[in-house]
Length: 357
Image 1 (cartoon, rainbow, N blue to C red):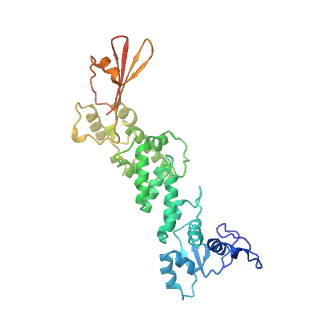
Image 2 (image 1 turned 30 degrees about the horizontal axis):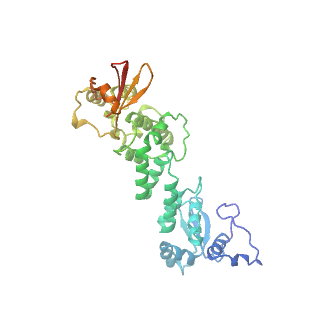
Image 3 (image 1 turned 180 degrees about the vertical axis):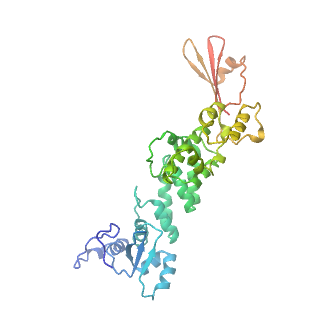
């Protein structure tokens, strides 16, 4: 089982037969030396689509993984010493074996990513390595990768990671998602919102707690659809966008948009049918709006009240000192997403009231 120096996974240092310095190291370092130099290897794994060969020792693997123990015991007396592993990247499988040998693992920004190593750890039931992967993925979670990692966590059925991604996304959706509808390049970061699959898009759209305006969420979904059309070698026309968004469109809460937003961004684009547009316009123009058709808001909105002295320019926020200023004012409440009202007040004050619901 000689190494192939052309394979970066299997490259090792040449050892001096007369050198015994490595034997003086601690147990884990000796094991690492044995793994890197293929000492006493008696089984070889043919890994990935490229069929790279990674040798190892049966006993060490059996001690570190119950799955390896069961698998290798059946082959112990078999003359065949090669086992195919087609579903794991060679670099990730190499890190799995290295961890079993010496409890060390490297997480890189590029391949192998932690998700591939986590998949390998779960498949071969190496709990300590699985915990290391989850810890790394949790500590490096950010606005730019939360959607992609949510997709991976769902695929790997890692409930801890799924919960963390959902909590993070619910608070930071405006930056984690809406930033992507302004992206014009067809090349996106490999861990971005654009890289997720349609199942993850639907999962996100089903979330009731998401700190993002529906119109911005819709724009980001359209941007994702452009990338998805390209991935499927489809033209980015109206018909194909509707095709790739077939599962997602019913989950978009168009009725959370203001009449102006719906008219300017959605209406007339052909994404919805004429009947669907008329139904939504009817709802948005109704006063009061039918409670049975009212969608669940994705985040709680607040009322911001401020008053400005035209003479001094001083601004007062809604505190005790404003009660007297506002006590004689009547503000009509409109069922709109954002309403800015400017009212003349006594003593050269004017009021700016921004209402959210």
